[in-house]
Image (cartoon, rainbow, N blue to C red; front, side, top):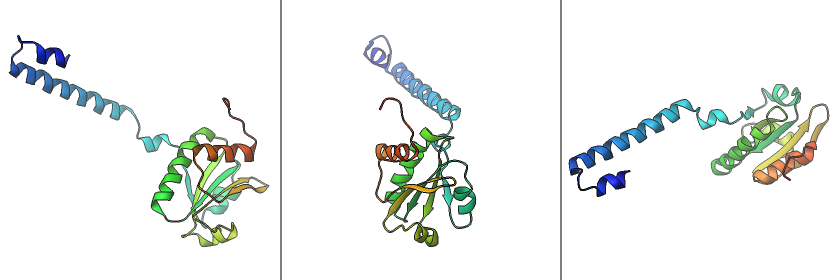
Length: 159
């Protein structure tokens, strides 16, 4: 439409400017209405519980669901990357797996007990059984889902 207006010799330059301005205002109003109507992306992501020595028993050992634990060390880039992947993947397991993360630097006693040595470690705990799977490397989305599925015997459609 803007192309038609700008190429039409019967519409004055002032009117062309007015139409352009109003189009921009309309676009801004539409975007603002969409933002107000939709929750923030962070609110759409399932929660990943930050665990430490104070809440480990309650959040991990007393869980009725299997627990995926991501131990990490304070390296912002690597942690943010794995956290974003974990949050994305957690949505596929809502109600079936509890996702927690533990900072190995601020909870060294938990990291020692789990024998965490590198930058990260992943564990799956089954209630009443204990650790049933572990990995000590970065897991991309597909590898993380395969790690969880294999450990817990889940199958996904389309595989």
